[in-house]
Picture: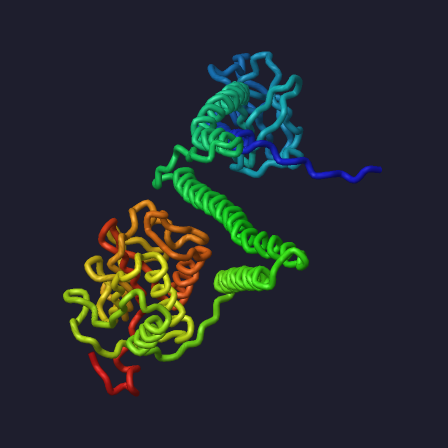
Length: 512
């Protein structure tokens, strides 16, 4: 025997229609039953009141005790009443009033067999047929009793017609409720139907569509707003995922291209070096040097890729007080030793960006990584500007706004979000007086493996990862790396870091 599985629920529309119809039907039936009971009770009360108000005359008791009506007068009453008499011994007499030939009530032959209390109406069947009678026992003179009866044909007819009318009205009401409920439910669920159609079109690939019903005063409207917000977030997430995948594909392609060049050179010179018999000693030395240079270049590229992967995955930095002025001075001294072709000077931030004075500027972070940023910026300034181009390193402290640093504005680019306005920051600027960058190049300068336009002359080319690494390190310290440039106006790279609070400087003795 197969187990009985629960029937799946019907559609929401069907359940709502059936539920509303069932509830309304129950309400109508309850009201009809209540009305029927009230009507029948009211009619019976009227009959009982008529029975209580009717009192047989005293001569009728005397005639009944004598065994007949004097003069042979008929016992017919000008109404539907029937009166039956019982003598003092409790036996029913042969005298009755109101007999008109129609079947009367079924009355017992003695008062004891009646089973009716004095003054309490009761219902009995007729002698023959389906009719019923309402009877009332009352006391008379000389210990006699009388039973007054009225037929219930009027009451039964009225209640029967009421039942048929209620049944017809119930059928009409149920049919009307089904039709009207279907229309009302369909109208009420119309926003859900539109949502369903829109959702099907979205699932078919039309991701720009949104749910039309967003009235916050209705439940469906609030649901539509929530779903629209969710769809927008999903669209953004899909867009970010696609952009991330595109960047990853471009990154892999660029990395492969960058690695292919030194690998090809190493392979070619290695094959050339194997032909020792055909090469002179100087040619062999040159081949070995070129192999070593390309291997070193490839090693540096691999190191940069590993560093980027580390920064993307789980960057870890030391947290220590850093004197940005000393850091910049060390970087300037190193740059002066390695590249005398570009004069480098150290000074304060110009007014109104900074205070105009060269002073100690403290931040919190990893000194090694922060120095790596400054050295990378100085290296770029030497590589991508003509020989003899002055390079200026400036250090100072200011607050974030569009006129200073740390905030976005036209002509400024950065791969990191802006800092809150008014935040105290320490700044290290590396500005050159070279040809500058066009806006289209400045927008991509922090992307991985990006190289600027060839019009910005350089003696040697890097891998295009230095600024990406520097930007990631700056963002990991809660700051950012930004660029202000324009064609013919040079480039100003700016490292912006949150400044240390005054109470943490020099053991809490310094102040602003």
